[in-house]
Length: 112
Image 1: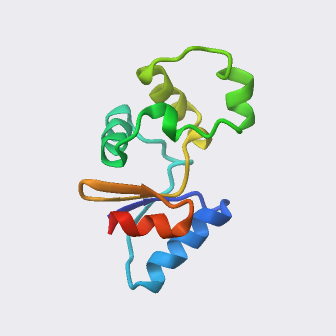
Image 2: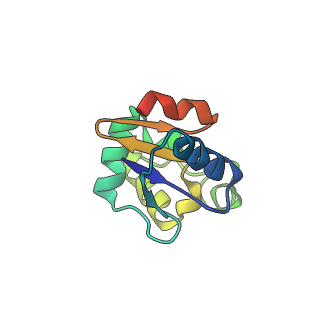
Image 3: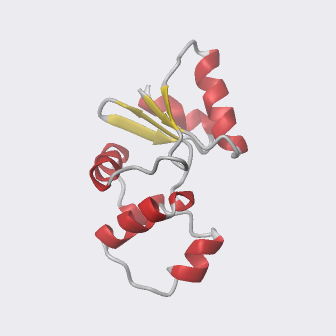
């Protein structure tokens, strides 16, 4: 079980606290410091049952400044999230073949 965590994000901290209250201690992945590989991000998208575009935080300044006016394909979106990990929605719990974005926190339950 992996938890993609941004310690500066309140929702990410809430999600981790929620899991710990249940007695769970997932492997913490600090994706802002160590971005995912393209293959790992593709596998995560498969577990989330999402396209890359659905995982993008389009309110981020970097998205608006660099990407919003471009027609990017799936691979280009994945590379954008690797280069700028703040574009990736958070937090994410990945548990085997299931994954969930913890917004709201209760959504994490679907990956347990």
